[in-house]
View 1 (cartoon, rainbow, N blue to C red):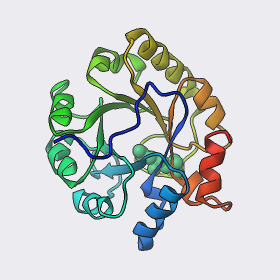
View 2 (tube, rainbow, N blue to C red; view 1 turned 180 degrees about the vertical axis):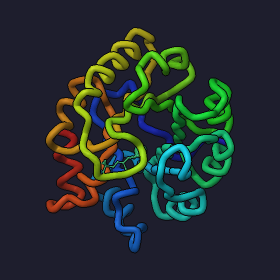
View 3 (cartoon, rainbow, N blue to C red; view 1 turned 90 degrees about the vertical axis):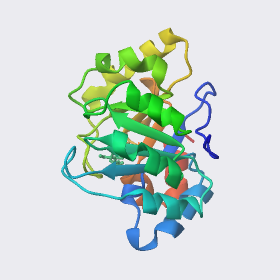
View 4 (cartoon, rainbow, N blue to C red; view 1 turned 30 degrees about the vertical axis):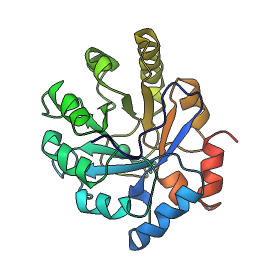
Length: 229
Ligand code: DX5
Ligand code: ZN
């Protein structure tokens, strides 16, 4: 069954803002999601960690299922798991619209990408900071999104790695050359100080945890600022 809240098309120009749930106040998750939705967020980014692929644990399908009932945002589920293939169906059933897996995981490629699409979601492939852009190029025709990590995955609130900008440029060039509409998402330490450079390097989708949910100016102002307004 196709997802009910698909990601916006990658062929439409503009910057999409995907607040990361990880930085929300977990005592009032529903309100936090409503707040960013009303504040102009385009997508909800959901970080899933297994304590193995990364040294942290977060959340599972039941939480996605609960939030699905109160939000119509596209849910962008970022699986930081050694075996993400086991969780494609549970997250799709819970209400994920898009699922990204890591090229460094043990998942069979490209099989897991086909499984994500068969489950009704769009598919993404992510690279950790130490992994070159070339690792995802063989799979560009199998994905709707490429995710460049600009921190080591595992924790929110880390500093943006500016030395990832050339990788973003390289992937944007490869996407353009492919002729396909593929989102280029950047995740980790993104905030008002670096958003413009990330976008000018070629990203069209910004994940932002700390800089949105913990902004002193409020989520709505933070989202506007990230978008460049
Ligand atoms: C890190 C996660 C990110 C992170 C973003 O492993 O994938 O989504 O939580 O949070 P900030 O924006 O605080 O770096
Ligand atoms: Zn993430």
